[in-house]
Each structure stands twice: as C-alpha cells, then as structure tokens.
Length: 302
Image (tube, rainbow, N blue to C red):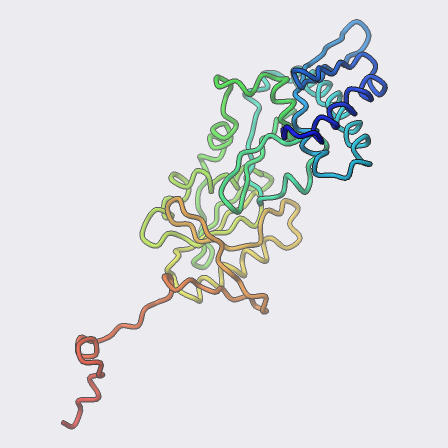
C-alpha cells in the first residue's frame, strides 16, 4: 500500500463509513486492518483483513467513487466469509484446491471486488487457484485463502494437485499435430506448466510450436517442422478456439525449454504463421558455393 496522504484519506473514508454499512465492523487505522463478521443466529464468525488491497484500488480511481468501491469491497468480504464457512462442509478444503492456466489478464478482466489468488506464469499466461466444491470450481480469492488457512506453507499445493489429475493424459496424433485433450476437464491447460512430463519434446532440439485454444485442449508440433505444418497447427488452434465454451487463447507460441514466446499469425484466410528466422529451413549450399560463392553449374563447360 502506498504511504501517501491520499492513501491516508482512503483509510479515513473507510474508517468513517464501514461501521455505517456493516454495524460491528471495526477498522484499525494503525494496524491497517478491518474486522468483519458474518453468521446466522448463534453461529457468528469474524475475520481480520488487511486493507492494502482496497486502498491501492481506490488510489487508481477518482475520489468521488471511493465510497462505492469501499462498500462493494466490504460486502464482498462478508460474502467471502460466508463462502469459506460453507466450503468447510464439503471436506478438506486444502485437498480440493485446483489450478487452471488461463490467458494473462483473464483475472483482471473478470475478477470481482476481491482479488483472485493467482500465480504469474510468464508474459502470456497466469495460473488461477480454484476450490472444487461438489461439481463446481469456485475461484479462490486472496482473502478467502487467508480465511481458510491455505496460505500456510504446509498447505497442499493447488498446482501439484492439478498436475496429478492430468498425469495420465495420452497424446493423440491428428495429421502431424499432437493433441492433449479431455472433454470437460479444464485442468488440461496445466500441461504447459508440467511440460517436462507432458510436453517432453519442448526440451529437445528446437522445441515445439504450441497452443492452448481451450482449457481442455493443448496442441503442438515440432517447432522446426516447417511452414506447412506450422500453418496447419495455427488453423487447428483457431478452429478449436472458435465458439468453444472453455476458450483459453487463440495464439501460437514457441516453447523451448523454459522460454515461451508468441509467434505472429496473419489474419489472412487461411491464417499463416510468421516463423522466426531460427525456425525457417536454411538453404543447403555446396562446398564450392560456400568457398567460392559460385554454384557448381557456373563451372560447367569450363
């Protein structure tokens, strides 16, 4: 949280208005926390939450909307507390964590008043943490993760729990394109994270050209397979992404070891891949041309 006079103004607005919106709510301006409560009847619970997130959000907005932002955040905290209480009824919450690989910026575009629990993953993707409750995957927020005690180092890793579920994926060949897929399983996108086991070709030679058109689908081919194969992969990814209920990314990437870079694809119909120079076939030259700059035919006839 930024320690400016504006930040202190946000804190003061929070301290003045929070008890009005949520009777019993206590703001500690020294510790920079707010205590909120929830429950029904005799079952009453409370949690102490840091206010850094809402202060930072307000500092990015005009002052006249601070009050509305603060109210929405406080009410979201109460909803998070109620959800945390409910989730305990379904068993060990830590073991029900799951992680999904999504396109970078997805969380910012779709998140509510409370920030998601997420892990950055390079320049193009991010890993969002969820809790499996029954047949539903619920986004885990930073606040609820703290309420549930999942921020403790001893808590199970949502990434490892997810990778264990897709460890049995078998690659399938489609006209020179390799596909990892399982209908209705959004964890398949995490194959990019577990590339050593599920995409071992990524660490060999030139690596792979890869796409994640759907959360349930990853497709790739050798990076040095040539223009025709790269174009076929780009078309396959575009078609798989179009109208999919679990869209992830329509883009194509070059994955080599730990390096993941986006490869441009033209908007032509059909699309064409703009291969990096390193992946384009190099013309073979004879030793004569290499040494003297002349083709063997230049010597014909003396």
